[in-house]
Image 1 (spheres, rainbow, N blue to C red):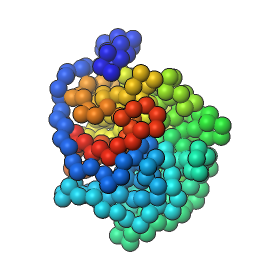
Image 2 (cartoon, helix red, strand yellow):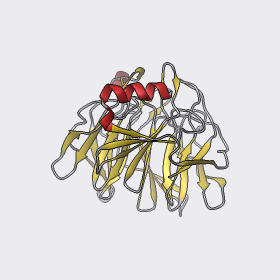
Image 3 (tube, rainbow, N blue to C red):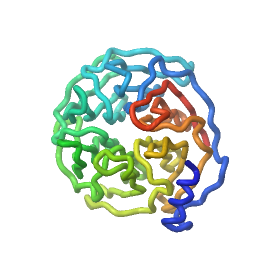
Image 4 (cartoon, helix red, strand yellow):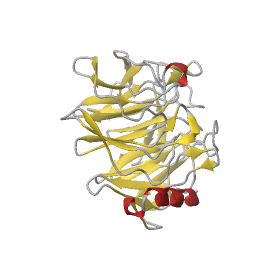
Length: 307
């Protein structure tokens, strides 16, 4: 897919990306017990948690980078795919997704690793799947995705764990699904995605949310328009992995620096895939699961990126 990446760079101007082949290093960790795709992944207290997805059922699988071993926790209350996951205060939160086929859900769950216990929280005001969710200042921002009729929603809703309540914030300017989001220096960056579930309509969009002004701003677009991606942050740089298009899956690993508003290309992923998850433990990105072919494929891959 590198040719696609370079065409995208040319279409938006070479100043927006600084590519150098071979930056960064990939290694391989112990594979997941199950093969999945369209998973939700987050790190809590130094361990990686994988929730839901095609092929996952209700299983909660937990990876310990220190021992390179997997274990299982108490099953998730409901089988989900295309959900979002994040951590706040040593607890795991799972937001939205699809259930019972392709029905968008408003479910919000909290998992306490110390108690190995799930708890149902106040429902998401806008039921949706293929959304993005991040934590900022101790609150959860649920952004975009698809709702009723598999149509995109611009919904941007914020959950406060202290009061178990949701409030609405400024809507996402470019509604889309299968997108990724990350937080750097108190601002949210929402990157990539597709229109109404069609990976023939991938986007390079990169929009920044300023909490102080409750406003959105466009930033340098992602060099490779793609969806079904995963995002995480190392040293203030947002790393975007994988994705899919009608022509195949992506092996691109691209980094966005909000300070310079520029992109860098990194060493290609060992295995191109989409519907994957990514999270960081001690400056290493664990890129987990995902389909190696467009559509409903799955894998148990655990590939580790370091800069």
